[in-house]
Image 1 (cartoon, each protein chain N blue to C red):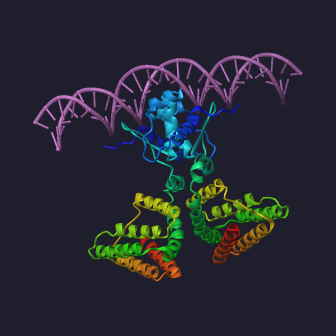
Image 2: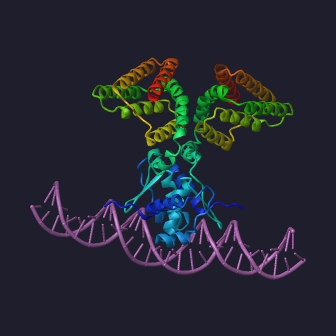
Image 3: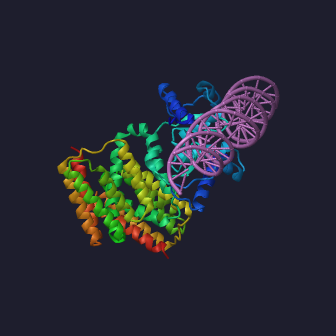
Length: 223
Length: 223
DNA sequence: TGTTCATATTGGTCCAACCAATTCCTGTTT
DNA sequence: AAACAGGAATTGGTTGGACCAATATGAACA
């Protein structure tokens, strides 16, 4: 037989606990001793499960304080494997390709589903980005935020998670920017066109605008 | 002071050990008890570090055997991505949507990149599927294989991993079949059209064919 | 040569205690 | 009443030793 070790089962049960009790990001879990008692296993076993979940980015333990539900935060996980990622620079192109597949359709979906608030947030971000560019500051923060809000507006968490992970990979490999003013302005213009399409609820135009935007970025990146 | 817990330090030291000693994929690490002695920490602490590395995909422990170096391949990184997907199995609709975003573009890419051998494999699968349908057998195996070969032909491991994860989820939830002869034949016809487009290297037609194919499936699934 | 079985090795689990960081209450001071 | 200081309670981090369970190994056997 190939029975799973107990700590793996416990891992799942803790996840269940979190889900069925509707834990939200930042909530504190019961102390290890309680969990051990509740699941009828040793505290040791609980801790191994917690280490697993911590590495997976689901939880975070703070000495003397407690264990917290982190939601799914990828950037922290990625840090632990950064060294590994660096050995796979050649694959980063695939990640870009993956994003290139998703983003235009996200834009199209968002055109149908975006809320008033999200649209406003988007406009605010583009505004901020414009300011940053004009001041010759780094606008990568705003740029990332723009794409993230869009993914949220598409209202599909699965896609959102995939995109977040991709972004984390890209960030971590520091492939990044080469940002200058002309490139920044082009980015702002692209974003404005997308926002415009969203405002009109025009799916096709949104898709196309995003498509063009990404192509432009790719060209200026591959200098 | 904000000293890291010991198990985190041990995690790094184990990685060092692996690197400096030139461990290769599949090599066996020293037993936990040795490691504990060598690093002057408790075996418990070692184990927590091992759990962390195991979750990161670097190591694998086998009961009664030993702990092995798994190497750090790309898929271990993507595991992070795919695990995100798998935490959302309740949202099966989103998963379908995700696939719907990817598959047509995969078809388009595959039209440019597919090899002779892959095209042959594709034809063989469609052939088998046709046989299965005519014999009123379940063709889900062939159907899955078709989409997988296509993803391989697109030659993008990142996308492939995401799709595999999605497929596993769909399989898992047994949403599936409702397969009957007319639906099966429609599927075969759809696949044939896609193969035809691939053979001609026609990206756009491949995309469209896949798009239509998916729409048809969705309709017949939502009975 | 091939099989079986005892044994050693190794990961998995448990317990009970103690260390260390943080929080929280309580009493004091201002 | 507000601010502060200090100690107790809570909670994660670590330890050592014991035992269970799966696997590998090698010797005895057919």
